[in-house]
Length: 224
Image 1 (tube, helix red, strand yellow):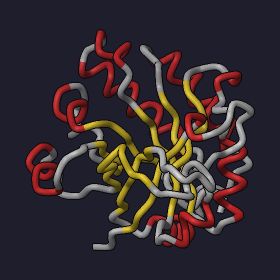
Image 2: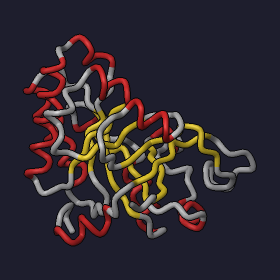
Image 3: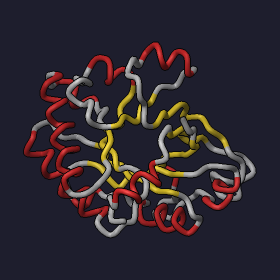
Image 4: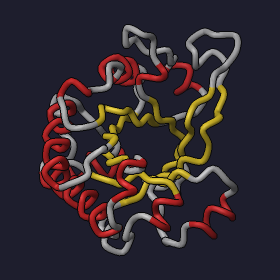
């Protein structure tokens, strides 16, 4: 099983004007292979992540593999369809050779039932998959255990946030196959983030357990 290193970022790793603070060429030189970019959040086109375009262009120029994710606030199926429409619009012109993911973790959804939350996740991911994308679920270990019916979501790969040892993660998350593991939010890479900085700031770090770039390209998904 491969262990491929990557990071995930959003507008919080960019300047106020949306220009990236990450040196992707140095990131790649350190052995990192992919980056997951937040495309946006919510149900309005104005909620596109203001750094998405800058992050994408710079990561592409550096030769990194790129995926995208959407942060959901949907609390019903109607809002879910609105979010799908926005997300597909934001990524329509992008060549993404890593998966696209639904990020479901917002506390506003905790007022719903497990069935309702799972219905939202299934609806979003099914619609995006039907549009021709390799689609996966992002959540943390608490949500996987207590807030979602993971059996109903078994069709989709999981990108799991769980900041602990691999042995402890295996105890917390019983599913046999994991797509991507977000194993820390405290990665520091001097000169990579912020770009050229003497003191490194913290990044989310990930390990992919599948050669997604090869899988997606061979299947002709994600606009490839």
